[in-house]
Length: 331
Image 1 (cartoon, rainbow, N blue to C red):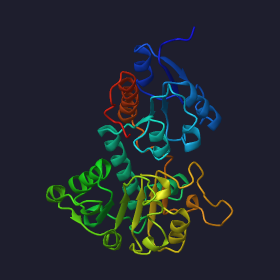
Image 2: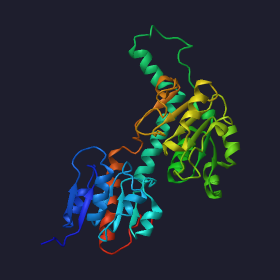
Image 3: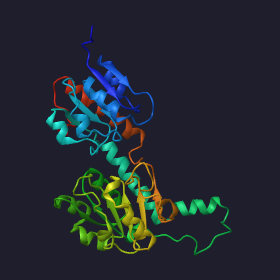
Image 4: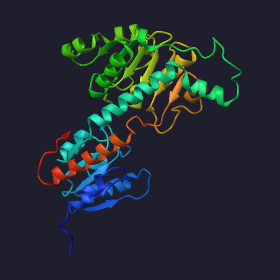
């Protein structure tokens, strides 16, 4: 006899309390035990069979997969803030709720990681570490690995959501930086609190010493930073991307870096993730440049953020299966 208990599929092991929360509700939880990305065939089978799916941003639910969904599937809870891995229109057509996991803990973690990249590039920390490990240090030298102090610099923030605001808060309150921002709408109260100035994207790129990207990946933001927009930046300016890889045209930024049209690039996300190079056969490589610092999509990887994401992902499912609308419902 088929069990009447709701069935939940978790696409990959996750930290935090989420899985335990689902089990305590009496749900049957099936966990894909291996820490690898599962196949499209497995996702197609899951949408046909389960009442809810807790997935990661590496699981791509396209229209073909979602069109295969069976009547039991009520919700896909994405263990991420972004949801560009899910075809929203296809989910809407099948009346499948989509929810995500935005929270202050994630905003704090990503804001901090953004500043870690800013500081590491501005003060050449990775270069200094490699230099010292290679036993090249022979004594104090006033000309050795000179960097830039942040207090006299202008930070340009594109996208003033919770993470963008967190970056501005740290820039102004922690380092006394000047701030320019660009967003879909102007926030005069925020400007008054932080002394920030709303400008066009073009003026932001022309005037900023550091440009930090905090927009979602949409058709309108794909390759937001391209050959044309990169040309507007100062030659010693630093670009930071902790949002989504395809927001930056990797080929264009590589050419800008190799030709010294910009000063540096700090990134936590890659355009062709997880591949470091979109074009592995050409001679341009991000990893070959001292002016580049890369991290493997870990900006939200703190204990507090991961626990909060796990809890919210489970709460989304519980609320949906109890006939409620999840607080973090996207559709």
